Image (cartoon, rainbow, N blue to C red):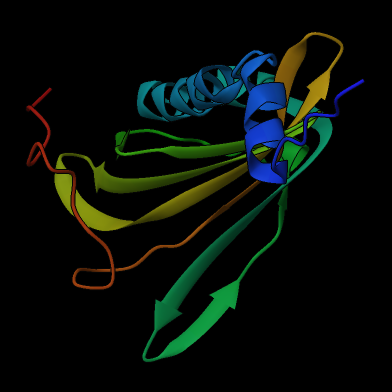
Amino acid sequence: MALISVPYREASAQAAAKIPDARPAVIAIADSALDAITRGDVVALTDLMVPEAVMFPTSTRDGVTAYRVRTREAQRNAPMTGIIERGFAPHAMVSGGVAMVWYPYDLYVNGAWSHCGADVFTLVKSRDSWRIASLAWSAEQPPACEKHPAGPPAKR
């Protein structure tokens, strides 16, 4: 009997090819979250989250970076009006029942430029669906971040 040796990377690639790619599904959840924010629909946004979800908004001012913590319930009760948040060039990574989406974005409030940064979604799979477990984001100004490559959003 002859033994065939398959290099580790090749074996890993062969095994990965047999597993459905979940990256489009987790990016779709992140897209749905940004759409809900732009619509001002806090219920739709928080419905994408597990009940224990936590958000970590960060910002840097005068060279000092700070973060806050917001629960899903606090977010559900916070008004979101006049916001246009547009993500671009998302990058997703998935391992079993956990996923991460890195999503650069820019944000306008009442039609005026506000900031840009990156949203980082951590998702978990519950039964057959992906849900947001945490969401952290940076709020910066260029050149620390990039504006959307399509330019400013169309006027509403």
